[in-house]
Image 1 (cartoon, rainbow, N blue to C red):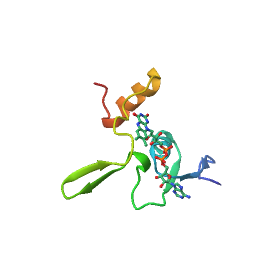
Image 2: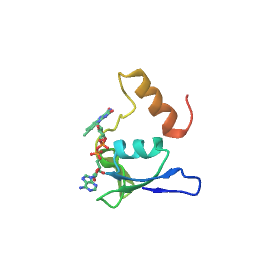
Image 3: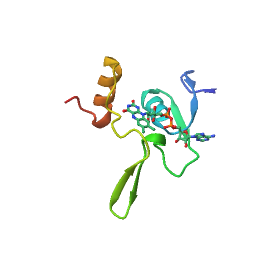
Image 4: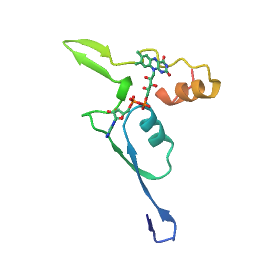
Length: 84
Ligand SMILES: Cc1cc2nc3c(=O)[nH]c(=O)nc-3n(C[C@H](O)[C@H](O)[C@H](O)COP(=O)(O)OP(=O)(O)OC[C@H]3O[C@@H](n4cnc5c(N)ncnc54)[C@H](O)[C@@H]3O)c2cc1C
């Protein structure tokens, strides 16, 4: 952590893991960040693998369901930047 010209705290955050949790945190952070992901691409259990024209989901294929109203609204708004 270091102080900038205007004495504001400049902080770079390291996020361990680029799954849904890490990507959501990065999306909400107001600081500079770096995602530390051990795989070649981010997404974690929500990744989709392409092979010979077919798409295979690693995990949550219906990720848009949630009983938590606020969480569900957040996912809808953030997935494509619109609420439909
Ligand atoms: C079949 C299935 C169906 C599902 N359906 C739903 C659903 O309908 N709705 C729902 O909300 N959820 C669903 N889920 C759960 C959802 O997929 C997970 O809760 C969510 O993806 C977890 O995200 P995460 O970021 O916490 O973890 P992960 O997706 O596991 O991401 C962790 C990331 O950290 C990385 N990592 C781990 N260790 C290190 C390390 N040492 N250094 C660097 N990187 C590291 C991994 O490579 C990975 O990319 C489902 C899961 C499965 C398997």
